[in-house]
Image (cartoon, rainbow, N blue to C red; front, side, top):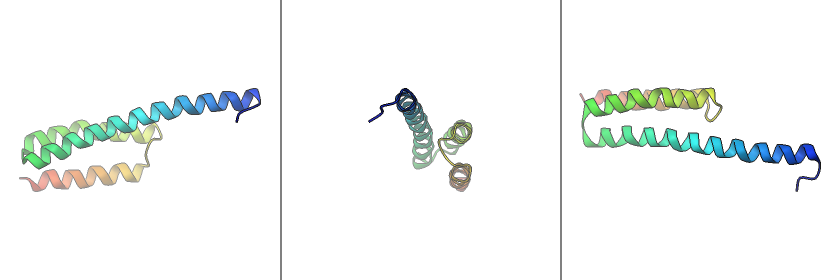
Length: 87
């Protein structure tokens, strides 16, 4: 349990940061799910549009420290190849 004023402040900051990061992760997953659903439906135009909107969201997660750069790049690459395969 936090005792010193500094550790109390850090605990409070950690809770706030956790909530923000959780919301960001959830938002990214939503965008990824939209791409997955568009791919599953077989609609290439919708899938390409969904991917185009998901890409900046993934990279924003990288700049905010929610995920690693290589992880986001890998996800974008795999989704892009799956969208391209629909053609």
